Length: 233
Ligand SMILES: NC(=O)c1ccc[n+]([C@@H]2O[C@H](COP(=O)([O-])OP(=O)(O)OC[C@H]3O[C@@H](n4cnc5c(N)ncnc54)[C@H](OP(=O)(O)O)[C@@H]3O)[C@@H](O)[C@H]2O)c1
Image (cartoon, rainbow, N blue to C red; front, side):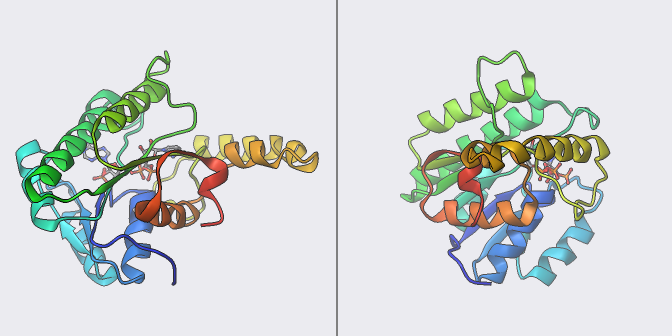
């Protein structure tokens, strides 16, 4: 596979649908990739093997700011990807995971950059409609992370896709698949009448399409990037 790849890259959320696709894509392009797997993951051994097969390095640094800053300082990534998130069904909480761990990673990246004199680009996987003032907790935490990215002093990108889904997702999420299918169908008309930009913003994407865009954005992306620019990577 050809295309740009930031190297080295650090991928947090590497065991997720998007993180796994991105890790494999970057590694296939010859990038040095550290794929973060939480140390308490019951599938740690399996992920170590999957990373080795993809020619990526599994990194099981604890979710602790000092430890994460030290790991990033040692690896000196050109891009730090924050692709974490939980679901209501899992119950870990948007505040603790989507906001808390992402914010911890960002603070660790800022410290590592300062300590090593490097300027990694932080690429955050947000969502369409992210807004710190939203009453929707999912959108609000993403808006708060974006506010911290802006204030971080590092180069940053926030990718705001609509639904991310595909038949290749390991975890079954039927409600999400149905919602994505209905949304995509509703966008057929706007596409037909030429409102392609709007349709592209809200149409669903799959992990491989998004991974191609994230690889490109990790090299030269800037600021908020919405759906229409997350395609055709
Ligand atoms: N799905 C969508 O339609 C959609 C749309 C827009 C934006 N997004 C956002 O995009 C991001 C990635 O999406 P995805 O579909 O790739 O998600 P995913 O498949 O659910 O992967 C989530 C990642 O977060 C990690 N994670 C979850 N809970 C954790 C915890 N308590 N501690 C440490 N790590 C934890 C998971 O690790 P484990 O494997 O160890 O659990 C996994 O690596 C998420 O922020 C999501 O909200 C999703």
